[in-house]
Image 1 (cartoon, rainbow, N blue to C red):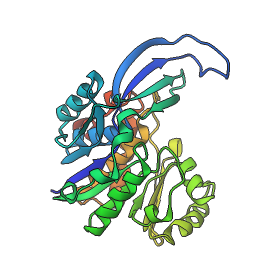
Image 2 (image 1 turned 90 degrees about the vertical axis):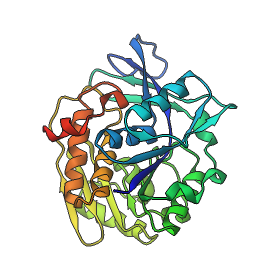
Image 3 (image 1 turned 30 degrees about the vertical axis):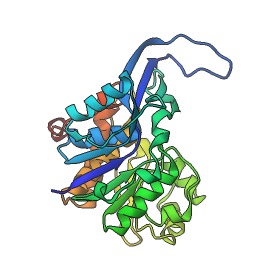
Length: 299
């Protein structure tokens, strides 16, 4: 099986538990502080590795302790990390995360070395033996566009998780085969609030005009919807007791991409993504919460 290539961010997550998310100007107490490997790109790569995919991660870390921990964790989780870029001029990226009693989180990301993954770093050798390229938006948008354009030119299927939501050029979007936003990101890109199937189809028309053929919108506790201009598919979210929603979207995307890479149908891919995310939210942290292939098979 060919590789999945994930190009994106690596962050050290500094995580604390709070009873309730503080209001503006309010000071509250946090319960402990944990350092947990994270970053959208690395989360997705690690989740794919734990599911048994052949996956390579490309990103940038600082020459510091956090960077060493993040790279070592990728390798332990069966992710190829030979081309991770080391940056002496910037520290490894950091995310400060508060998780409240309902399992919801508030996150501040400091890009650090992630901001030094540059368009000129992208080379054709990245795409050798690759069937699927997956990007997010925690690295420079110009680099994401270069990766997607190069992959598209080489006949590699491209997947974009447009998170965190940002303004994106038509040129970048025209290089995306499969777009996977959540509800907020979908509205940001299309101007359509997605509440019904008709909303999804209306928003799809705008992005399909740019060349995007397929879209999956994640809907949190309502599951996910897929549309490709002809076929509509849906999957319901599994009912679980959520402890921490960090990496829920990343794990869903990993489940979908791992399934597609091994030739599963889109419906099967949606169901796999939902199972992976359901386990993830019952555990604390980002990469520390991601399930193995055996755990997913058990639900």
